[in-house]
Length: 340
Image 1 (cartoon, helix red, strand yellow):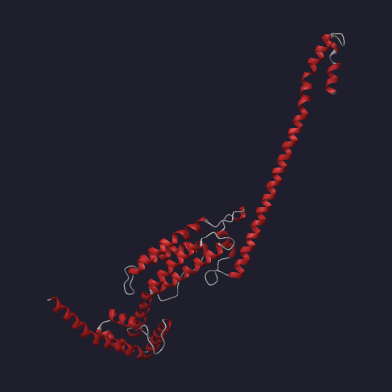
Image 2 (cartoon, rainbow, N blue to C red):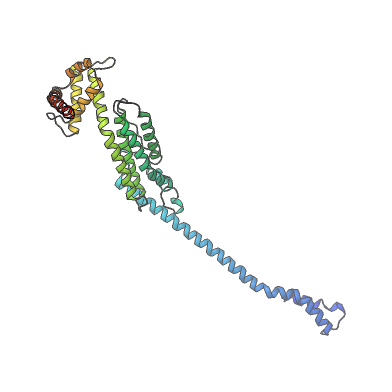
């Protein structure tokens, strides 16, 4: 309005009579621009105010979402903490910090994404086939043959490397390095424990790893254990008998001390298999180890150092075998006669 009044007052010098048609035309022409501005100013102000309100609302929504995401994250961490304190799934397996493990299992938790690591899912999905391949190698491995050892150890180490990424577990074993199969047997047990612990931790809040996948992995591992255990036992027997009867290097122990030590180990192994000090249930394995690995000269030393109860069983087994041998020879002769 102030601008319009100024225009009216300044129109006089044109020489036209006030309120004449020429004067009014010139006045209207002078007022076109301020009238246009005045006409669109209110809608523009309305649009600007609406836009500012939209921006403010968006900021409020984003802030609320961030607060909800952070609250959910804290709640998820709290539940994980309670689970780890109550269940202790990694006890005697690893000393990894629970928050380090949490970050490895749920790498996007801070963003509100509580899905487990895709790397862990891929690991679980790959294990059945890898364990099956390991079992095939173990089937070809013999307790007194080193041909498959490098291949077996590589496959076990590869799986340990992947499990160590999430558990930081130590798979080393304090057994005698000569007991290769026994060491692998222990390492497989540790892997089974790690798999079970990771499964429980990953599924503590919701089932993200399928039960069927865990069962398949455990079943494959059991097959490996079933395959390696008989051979690892023979390996132990061979090493114990060899070290007691044919010691390498300087041995401060007397023969009597070595005999007592061997007796304790053999009877303990026998008890683990369901026998007792009077009933030897591993006599077939002992006889097989002695027969396949020692010559006649070494047998005299071995027989002298074996516990008496073991020797009695061995003698009975040999006598029984000799008694059955004529019967087998007669059967072979009868078979040859019938064929002719």
